[in-house]
Length: 246
Ligand SMILES: NC(=O)c1ccc[n+]([C@@H]2O[C@H](COP(=O)([O-])OP(=O)(O)OC[C@H]3O[C@@H](n4cnc5c(N)ncnc54)[C@H](OP(=O)(O)O)[C@@H]3O)[C@@H](O)[C@H]2O)c1
Image 1 (cartoon, rainbow, N blue to C red):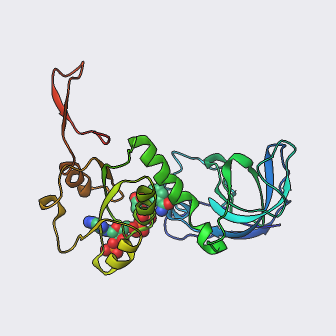
Image 2 (image 1 turned 135 degrees about the vertical axis):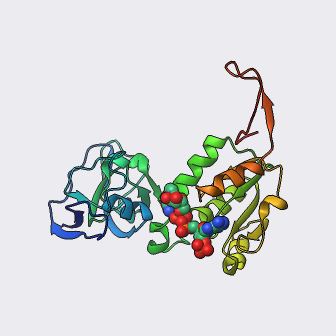
Image 3 (image 1 turned 30 degrees about the vertical axis):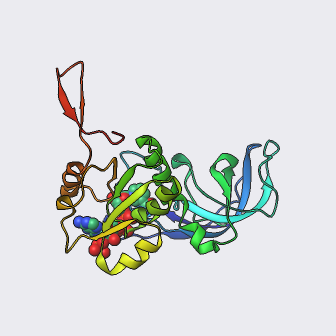
């Protein structure tokens, strides 16, 4: 089967080589997927440039790609959630990437069935961003009825965060590039702020959670609009702590 591999890390030039390798073998917990589309995420470029090799030191050559869609072609003996012919998508485990391939042997726990309303290309762009957001909301302990500020709601991660936060019954305030306001409001945001024309720190306060997709100088600004909670800490006698789930 054909795969696209990195053979070197290169900061300036992202190159993948298409080569032939053997079809993957499967364990009893795995599913063999014939890939129909794979997402190209900023993470793929970071991996190619060697920017995350301290965290995940892939041994080169490494087949690239993290997220995919495909059709189940075979199932392992212990798999009962899927059937041959199911259309599935997923994000490969960090230590087992390689979605830019014709076939993948994937742990069935890393797969879900694709809803009919998504095309293969649309579905291939979902797993990494959606799982990032699900994980972030879980870490926050986000509770229905509270308010979340999502910075950069016009971007890949922020845009995915809006419908997921709404599905969890949160009130969503977001900001981003003004020309995308209509698109972002259609995703379900309750309020959109154009970051180039309005300073939200003057008009937004007392939010329960912040999902910061921007970092840098923006982080401190986002902290300033959160509810403040006074806690007693065993190491510092008394301090004000900004908590994501305050
Ligand atoms: N994509 C993923 O799956 C993923 C997963 C985990 C983590 N991340 C991380 O999440 C971060 C965002 O990634 P992304 O893929 O969503 O980036 P992106 O698609 O480039 O989105 C960034 C968005 O933020 C807007 N923006 C820029 N400056 C802003 C400001 N000061 N205030 C408000 N909005 C501003 C941009 O608008 P303009 O058009 O005006 O620039 C753009 O719409 C990155 O650090 C990335 O590493 C991404």
